[in-house]
Image (cartoon, rainbow, N blue to C red; front, side, top):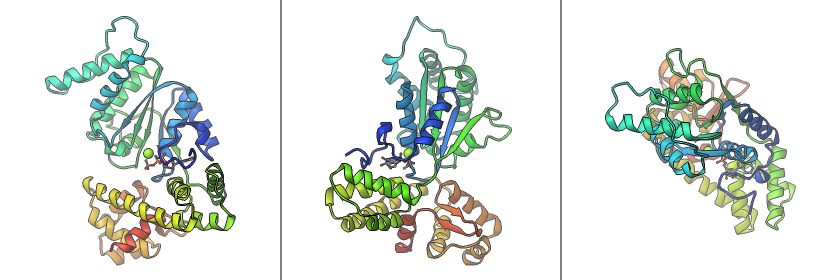
Length: 340
Ligand SMILES: Nc1ncnc2c1ncn2[C@@H]1O[C@H](COP(=O)(O)OP(=O)(O)OP(=O)(O)O)[C@@H](O)[C@H]1O
Ligand SMILES: [Mg+2]
């Protein structure tokens, strides 16, 4: 199974319907541009980044902030892990890393190690995945700006994540941020239109020796709404269950579990899960304008604005052409409706 493999894709042959985005990203990386990939959950950010790296053929390391939220530590670990594959010449003398902020000995030595490793590395792409989970934005931004200024010609970053926490400070660095003034290119990844979604379902089902007629394709596309992650999960289930309706039911059940886990994780971010859930509960019933939400939640203007901003940054809600907010993912809406 290739197209319906539920892991992020890293082989461009199995990256469906993203030719233009792939070409663009490869072009950016070739010219050393640093990139931020933005888009709702499960849209295919990690897959696009990995496929671009494969297509380029450059060495790369991946830092998954969900596994370790200490950027410096995970960068160092990852570089060390791949040290064997760097073309190390002679012993290198590392340039000075900006560590003199009253840091303790361990921290200083880790920064020095990092500095040596960066110096040793050849042309390298660093994928920072799910950057919103990284701790200590100021330190992250300081390190990024140091690497940008010192190694722009050989080390290129691709960063994905939701627009909160560290990610926000990277995308929108304020005038006092160490990253301020450094050009980082943003690429927005959009959901698939209905014909691309159905094309994906058809190609994938053909690959596993099953069929998919237009009617069923349309029903599935409507329920899962052009989100590659859910469509892939459906395909995986269909390949095993072989009955499209049963596979859809199973997919929705599993997807709700995924969404539920994520909502719990958001609680850990300390961004007001209770109030956020209240807003989502109202929007799960129907799309609403800001003023309607003010009435229904009873929040002050400032509080509502702040939470709506967070929900948009998380990719959970969006505003339509009538200025109404709606929940981006039909599975999230269904989950919220069932768990008041
Ligand atoms: N263009 C594509 N072609 C084929 N499969 C895809 C494509 N985009 C995404 N997928 C599949 O959808 C799922 C989600 O993809 P991926 O993890 O790359 O998305 P993401 O935006 O990084 O998600 P998350 O928000 O969870 O990090 C995976 O199963 C992946 O294989
Ligand atoms: Mg991802």
